[in-house]
Image (cartoon, rainbow, N blue to C red):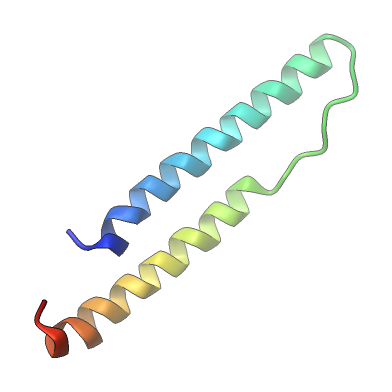
Length: 70
């Protein structure tokens, strides 16, 4: 498996995990009566990263791999 193909599920898992931790921290702060921290756009950033990795994977497998034959 190439680096790009391996990085796609790892990136998605990491982004989902970070979003879950952020939501839990915001819920806990609200339960304690504190002002929750502002939400960061983790899922949007993760989506952009996964799409870019997918595009890089397509370019690698269709254009570069046949030329390089690695």
